[in-house]
Amino acid sequence: MSTILNNDNKHDLSSSYEILDNLRTAILILDTDFNYVYTNISAIDLLGSATPIKEISELRCENISLSTYLNNIRKDSQSVMLRDLKFKNFDRIEKIVDCNISSYYSGEIKYILLELNETGRLYNISLDQNLIDQQKATREMVKGLSHEIKNPLGGIMGAAQLLDRTLTDQSQAKFTKIIRKESERLLKLINAMSSPLPSIDKDMINIHEITEHVTELFKYDVDNLGVNFIKDYDPSIPQLYLDKNQIIQALINIIRNAIQAINSDGKIIIKTRPVLKYTIGDTRHDLVVKIDVIDNGIGIPEKKLKEIFYPMVTTKNDGMGLGLTIAQSIIIQNKGIIECKSKNNETVFSIIIPWCTE
Image (cartoon, rainbow, N blue to C red; front, side, top):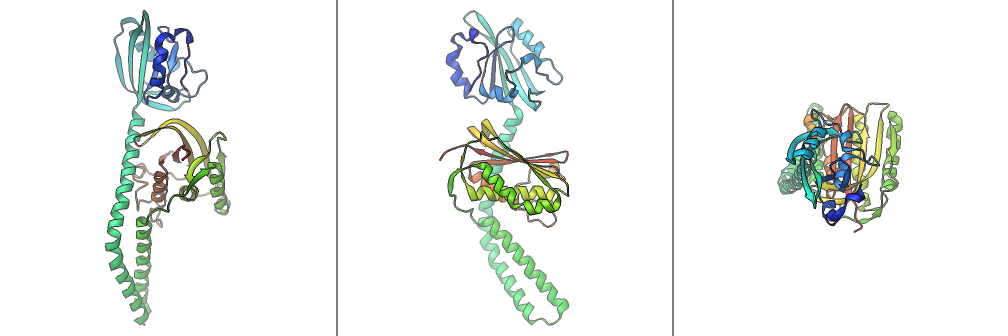
């Protein structure tokens, strides 16, 4: 819901509020004393959850004084565009925006208009869409190639089995075992990549029942490693219309990845939060649920982050690089996305799923 912070100055602006509330651009309308007249939902999300919202003059921007520009626009009405404006919002989260400051009159009353577009958000939208397209293209490519690979691979495995039965020299027999083992591994890899995902059987589910179930599955592993699960749940999250078994599998793959990244005495935080007005790919959702899996393990090299969800990409010596690919495919099939950030030995995998009832 939008915030109208100065009801005395509303005048005939109120007819436009409903339109402004549905914009992805953060809109702030100020009077000439820099008091808020109106902020739309996107602006509240951008500036942070401080209630009541702090004065705009308290927003600390890097290298510039926002107050100086506001004073200038109050005097001469000359609009200005500030590119890549960096600041920390009232929740102390760093943001980068393009900010357009202009003024206009409603009757004889002058107002100052700020339009802020998150440049980082637009970049993430592009990355999300690229990832969705990459997932589809990869699956179709593997489906097309799997038949051509399986036939000769089956011949190799059959020949290795025949050789294994006829060879008497054990020094040579070990090589046929290697051929069989690696052929079986390759066949397993192809099947995992080319097989269709299970048919979706959706129902209304409590996401916290899912997270509790999955953490219980890993109880033995974390107890042996000395890893602690820390749960930070938001009880206000509504039930979600999802495929329960698929979401369980996606969480298993992500949490297993987090456990493998921790040597010992580590922690894994599972945090859930509702988020208003979130864009996945090119679709804007009124409400999404965000499930963060945060570990303090070894982290992911920056050069790997952009390709971490691609097939056969792994940082482990014994991994096939499919766990995260499958998790991402599952969440995309449920209309969501998985994002990953890793910095200073903290890795965050965020499952973002839109709320819907059907």
